[in-house]
View 1 (cartoon, rainbow, N blue to C red):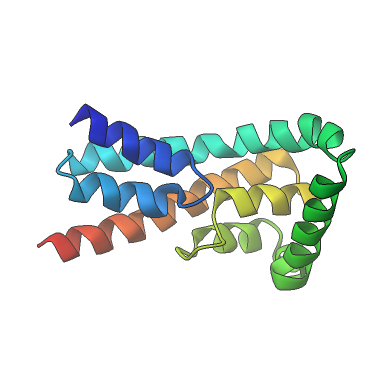
View 2 (view 1 turned 180 degrees about the vertical axis):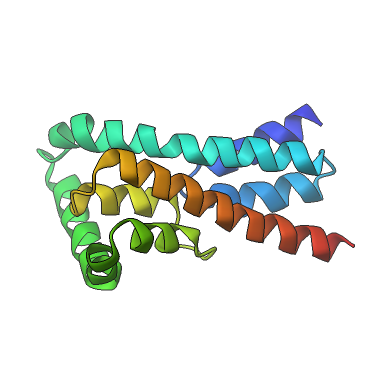
Length: 149
């Protein structure tokens, strides 16, 4: 059971699935469904401060590398083109709703990048990301729970 929970938490920390993958994986592996929910949400929320540290301090050094800079510019343009106007217009609520949508490409990683690109105050953005990922996780947990019945 511990191994399954660790795997679920690692998926929740991963940009390739976040808690959208971690929660169903943990629940379907036979682990305690409530413990899986709490740990996966907590792990996913921890991504925000890690991403902010990366974007504020480490990103500057990586921008010196051509490949990284081209990739970062591509991500920034895509973020601004896709949902940028809505996040800018609605601020806190736009960011919360963007993070809350339980589909690939949204979540705390994308919310952190949006926070950085649109200069959203970090305290507000942390709260919006935390609420958004919690609501998204509730949706995923409920859907998984109902499918297990």
